[in-house]
Image (tube, rainbow, N blue to C red; front, side, top):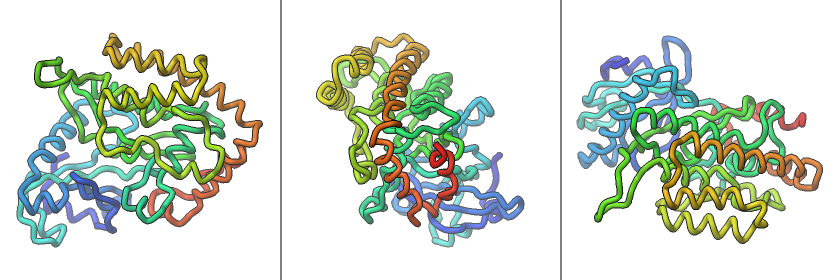
Amino acid sequence: MQISSKDLHRFRLDGPLGEGADLEVFAATDTQTGSSVVIKRPHPTLLERGQQRTVERRTAEAIAIKMRLGEALRHVAPMLAYTEQESHADYFGDGIDEPYTVVVDARAVGIPLVGSALDGIKRQPIGLPQNLFALHPVNAHPAKRAFSIAGEVLGVAEAFFTQDVVLLDLRPQNVYFDPAKAEITVIDVGNIVQPREATGRHAALDMHDFYLELLKWYVPSAPAPQDAKAYTEPHGMDAVSQFNSDLDALARSFGSKFSDAESGGAMSMLEKIRSRSYQGTSDFRRDLEELMKGLSDEYEKHAVTPLIGVWRDAASMMSKPHWSKFMFSPEDMSPYVAC
């Protein structure tokens, strides 16, 4: 529902949650219901310079698509409200009079698969969830097989593709994972782009660009780590994705670190992505599920090797105070302890 800046005051700001190049995000409480929510707005640096137009366009596109999809949009944080484009200086108390949109979302349960770059600078184990649950689930949730995350991320992109748009940059920082239920919640769908054919000036852009990002961030291109510390390092977090160079890097990684039999499925998928020859998302999903089944079978074998001990040593780091700022408790790891 659309609300005014005055209506925002029902949401009590509880403190900053994070910030990126485009957005500033706050934790808040709905004083009428007691629910935990998230408040998002364009980054103040952009607002102070009057440079929020691109963020506003992306926000408007996301709002429109979310409203059209409604309950059909699974694994995305529900949008509770959004404001008119107006000044919100009174609500934030910052004196910024530029007009902009504020979005109120339900707060995601769980932890980000990769934490913020700032937390990384502070030597926090920001890559731990990505490695434990997405890339190297040696100890999988008992109610689900390993490697369920990639399929759920794909489902979000498939839903947006029904609206004739491609959803890019679904980085692990934008995906929260609830260990207790082994489910994801996407917290930011801001990079919505229109597909295009190749021209003399521009390369083609379509779902193959998303498929590549999915393989880069949510499919292991190296064996399970041999020591717990290796689980803390995020994977594939270069600042800018480049289609051909990312394809080449993944092909080298699969080719050098796996046998021909183990890497064959992924290499075939990379070649189809390079040639943009997938006929539809169902074809890609079929290949992905086959790849993930083989990986799941392989990782189940690790459960009776010393690698399970390495995984559990890494998982013990989830009790660090760093993770307490999210809607997560070490008790949420209990399903894995029981395995």
